[in-house]
Each structure stands twice: as C-alpha cells, then as structure tokens.
Length: 252
Ligand code: ADP
Ligand code: MG
Ligand code: MG
Image 1 (cartoon, rainbow, N blue to C red):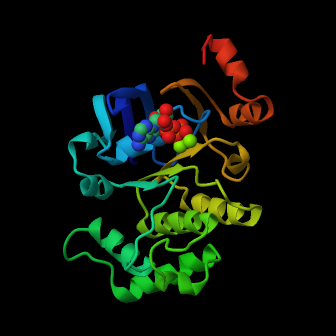
Image 2 (image 1 turned 180 degrees about the horizontal axis):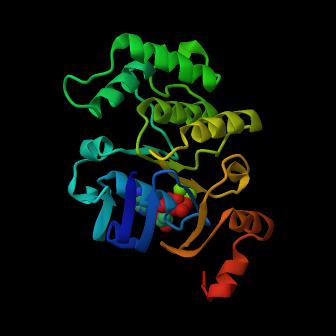
C-alpha cells in the first residue's frame, strides 16, 4: 500500500521559519486530519510538499513509497501520486475544466497509456453527477467565475478524476453550505480504500462529522503538538484550542 512519510520538515518563507520540525506518516487506507489555529502553517505545509517555489524547505525529507519527493520537480510529484486541493484555487482563463482534467490525468500517466476520450467523458459525467455539478461546468474555464463553494467542489472533482495515492485537502470545507459539504464528504469517502491516503487540513471540526478521520493532529507554531483519534476533533470543537496550549505550556 502507498506510504507517505514526512520527516523533521522545516520550511521558511522569505527567510522566516514557518514549519519547525514536522513529522507525520500516512499509509494507504488512512485518513488523517490536521487541525490548528489560523497562521500555524497548515497551508504552508501543503504548499511545501507540493513544491511551491515560494516555500523553501531548509531541512527534512518527504518520502512517497520510499522516494524523496523533495528532490522532484512539481510535475514529478504529481506523477508520484500526490494531489493538493488548495485553500484558494486559482482561475485559469482559456482552459476548460474538461481540458484541464484530461491533461492532468494524462500528465500522471506514461506515454501510450493516456486515458481515451470516451473513457474520460464517461468518468467525468459520472463524477460530476455524484457531486451534483451542472454539466456546463465541464466546458467552463477553470474556476473562472465559480463561487467559493463551486471551486471547492471542482477540487474534489479533480481528485476523483485523478485518483491520486495521496490527497491533501486544504480547508476544503470553507465556504460550503451543508448540502455541498455532504457531497464533498461523500466524494472523499468514496475514495477510501487501501490505495488511497488522505490528509484533511481544517480549522473547524464540522467536516469531520461527515468524514471520520483515523487520526487527528493538532498543529501549532509549525509542528504537531498533539495527536489522537476522532474524539480529539470533537473536544477541539467543544473547547477550542486554549486547553491544548495550557496543557503543553505553549505561549502565543
Ligand atoms: P494556516 O494555513 O495554518 O492558517 P499559513 O501556512 O497560511 O497558516 O501561514 C503561516 C504563516 O506563514 C503566517 O504567519 C503567514 O502570514 C505566513 N505566510 C504564509 N504564506 C505566506 C506567503 N506567501 N508570504 C509571506 N508569508 C506567508
Ligand atoms: Mg489560514
Ligand atoms: Mg491555511
């Protein structure tokens, strides 16, 4: 089964250290959640793993199936099986959703093993129906004029089409009403299985009512400070983060 290992990761932005010794291991079949106050580096972690040039990894390693992906270019990381649903998906004019998806899938495949147009269309129709997306979305430009909730749903469509080994979902619940939240959660739950591992990044516990994580980690000041099971998310929802700070003697 797939195996993701983040080992003592340190990441800086503009010379300022944001991620300060982050460790995590995710295996296929597992869903992990990272919760934490704003500004603790959750999105920075996601961007650094995916190879965003702004984020400088100063030390540490990230392995996918034993291979250090920090040595890889961005497109190679995707090919290695990583997928990121971004907190703020960007709009791309002139590229339709369908074209983007098809090239995203094929960029992850070997030459000669590209998905056929027929198969692609059938799969896209099926996944869009599951997410209750209007057919017109396939021919609209990528995220252009999409509402916040539509962008999030579109990120999940990408994940379902690409079928990565590991997905990192950054605040996929923000801006979603309850119906959209359920559809997005169903999409993630449908991916569950030994070939798929997931890291859900969220500020609020709400999403975790629909996707039950196997492990919950609290991130503060650039590292994991506490880990537990699904019950930890419920306690954070009820009591906030202050008790964690007190328990661990963390100052703001
Ligand atoms: P979170 O996702 O947990 O809310 P972020 O990773 O977005 O936290 O931000 C962590 C810290 O890094 C914050 O202090 C933020 O201001 C800073 N930061 C994040 N991205 C950038 C960036 N592109 N340029 C400058 N500072 C950044
Ligand atoms: Mg934030
Ligand atoms: Mg964030």
